Length: 73
Image (cartoon, rainbow, N blue to C red):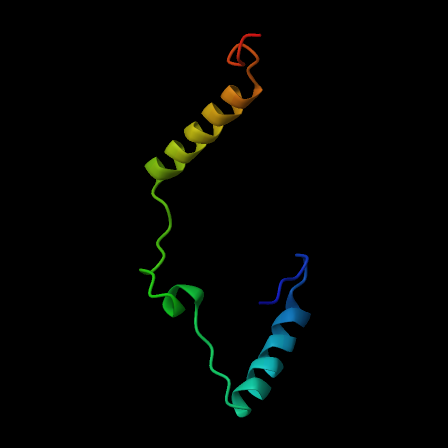
């Protein structure tokens, strides 16, 4: 896997194009991680799923920052 730091990705894309071509000539094949592990196709979360995720995240932040839930001494 290759990661860049964001911004202009044109050099990364150009390098990948050349790198993939060279590796395929050597017999390498490429696949997605999902396909390689037989995972179902990825689908974007629905609006309701995103809302639920944000609510869960907020609840975890509240609980983890609350001193009133800590054990009594």
